[in-house]
Image 1 (cartoon, helix red, strand yellow):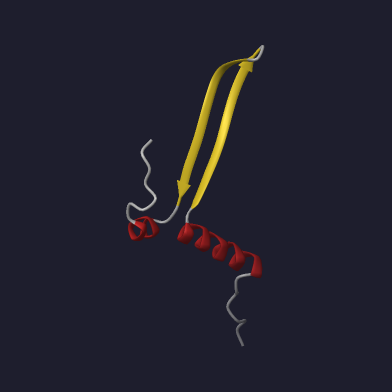
Image 2: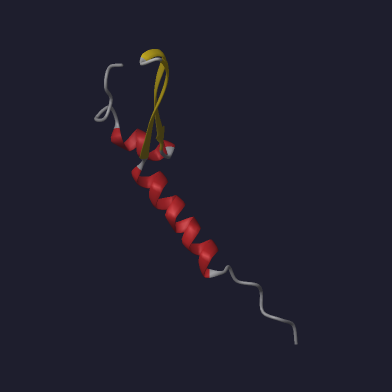
Length: 68
């Protein structure tokens, strides 16, 4: 008799489900970096990243678009 095929562990399956939910709904990551010297801002960088699947963006259309 041969051994049954290996199955995914619960952790791997949960990670795949989490990634699927994040891409289906979309995630926005924001951050801010500020470098100052003697209370004078020298560099200020604001970051925004949208992580989503292409299908989610196409189905959503222009509903979430904003002018930058």
